[in-house]
Amino acid sequence: MEQISLFKSASQAIDSLDNGAEYYNIFTKADDDLISQSEVSKVAGVRLPKQKSCSIFKIGNVRIDRT
Image 1 (tube, rainbow, N blue to C red):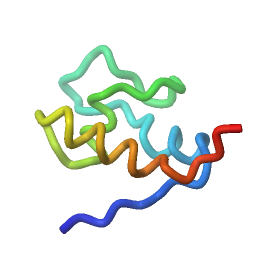
Image 2: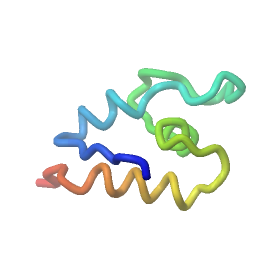
Image 3: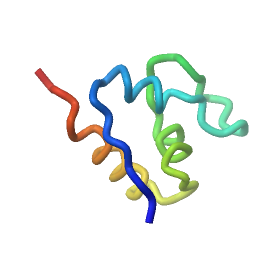
């Protein structure tokens, strides 16, 4: 089982997830303040299942204040 860390703010999520994805994804840049699906997949440790990586992203952001 993999531990999922919850983010406390949007800036913490961006810092963790905006990482440039894999080397072969030339369209994804690190530190551009945009989080792509491939960057979330990299952090989640998955390569293909989009649903799993999106679920981990949503769970990780559950505590972010939306106001």
